Length: 527
Image (cartoon, rainbow, N blue to C red; front, top):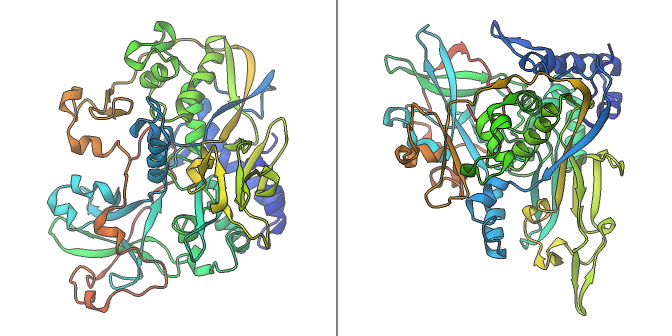
């Protein structure tokens, strides 16, 4: 059986730089790992179904020849943020700017451990802005992880609210002027795989993509990453979650200070394949048609029924609808090898540069640099690109305008990005047995009716019962949490000596080793 390739076949280049393993061995190992997403895999003694087990209509692209291949496109800017800021119902530059500013707000995850019924500690995490939704006794326990011990350096773990499979970071000069925009569609599974097998290659790639200022200890934990918790008797300790030397995929050069690969919990290869698998089943909505409850939109109606992703996104409803149309036409589907999420096209036709004599058109070739991926005109598979002025230019991106708006944020460019995945279709053979809708409650937000919330009916039996705390897990975070934003630190910065006497920080280091949180395998909801 042929091997599954890396996204955009980027491994053909990266594996050639390997020093610890042969390129062939790395290719084999990558293919074996991804086969689990198709055929199933074991985690903690439990079997996790692969796409081909989830749906009889999803086939292994290595064993069936496709009759056709087609891209499934969507827009790169987070549609959920446009829904929240009412851009869709009445677009204005002011509303767009609010959504774009929200897209740049990082979400920080905080950690704790609890003792289970089996007497063993288990790790938990929660976004910092949702801390208030926990019971008061837990709020006192939850905090950042640290290096080595409770008195070690704090390590913020952040991710972006950019959930359409493309993420970005803006660089500014000493005067605050926008100088560079970096966009990535690279999945975390690939970089984690590369880091586990060829850490030197990862270190060199970071320096090439971000700059020579990257240090190895920025990328790989220089000491054990430990989190705090208390057992049922109230005795606290710090317990190891990530061992020394483990790749930190939320390192500062991939979050606060750069963008190398995807960080949002739903932006993963496993979640992409899982979504396509559930979308390839036939659902009640396919038989009944679009519902007025969901604006008579077949894509929204279908995802509301099947729950294979977020109804607020651009990608999930679009992908699910297109896969469903093929299945209801009697065909089977699969994601095209090499499986990946790709930056397809970027429309910079309205780009202008301000000069002393007025604005002049600026061609994409003057500022656009594709650093990783395939620029094929028919089926582009771009993974990483940058926008910046040519070396030595007397202007920066801050002097540019896009669609008659001064370029200030990456979200303005993301609006002009068309993302794509590629799907194979095998004619005939689809099983069209109708599956009933998932039991969930979908409500419109009372203040922003274009934004949907998805709730467990056990928590909110009807929309009127959904509390602000229920909605806190659904709505975007429009600003950094005040409790933590002022204390963001990075590896290498020592804690305030005044905190050394804090009994939580000086709590002992436990002997237990916690199970690491896996890379999520679903687009439906953060666990």
